[in-house]
Amino acid sequence: MRIIPAIDIIDGKCVRLSKGDYDTKKIYNENPLEVAKSFEAHGIQYLHLVDLDGAKSSQIVNYKVLEQIASKTNLKIDFGGGLKSDADLKIAFESGANQITGGSIAIKQPEIFKSWIQQYGADKIILGADAMNEKVAISGWLEESKEEVIPFIQSYQQEGIQYVICTDISKDGMLEGPSFELYQRILEQTKDVKLIASGGISTFDELPKLAELGCEGTIIGKAIYEGRITLKQLENYIINK
Image (tube, rainbow, N blue to C red; front, side, top):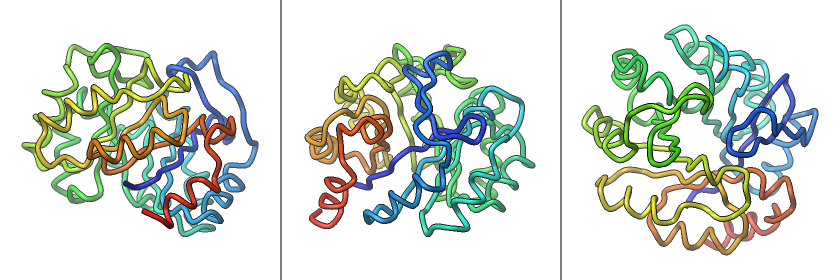
């Protein structure tokens, strides 16, 4: 299972939210590059970078942060937040993203999202299936759609999607543990999906459980920033797996 730390960006700074609520913003570092370099120094190869300003606006905003991290580390970055047009996608890939994550657009403008899968290939496009009460949430989690998360993933599997990030928003940033049951049901009902678990990771012991379920990767955010999981623990996990 891949270990994928998260950096969420508001105003160019590294922040975390609780349950996606922008009013709960806590700044952890003014310099996201510094954070990314500390991950890389501990053997981590992947990064989940989210443009929270972009998620609320009509376009990509913090692509300069992406560019800086991509050019000054060897991390493979998946980038999301505010990717709403072909132009946004082009900027993201030109700025150094290895993969992009599309959530809101997959619901609001499915034809555009499907065209991205065709144009760039399923290994470059991740479906963001972030759920509140098992309904897919969009627009920086400010809106709940009518789409149920498992049928939503299944419909995009038919379009060729392989990678799916699923965040249970009720768990995100709460440090109360991830949605093991939801992930188990997704993996049982969506054959061959590469599921990346996100939200609620709070202790190191949860990682082997997610791996055992069959998750392809896990995104860890607040647990790292609050010192619940150390980078040394993650380094040892990566070396020994």
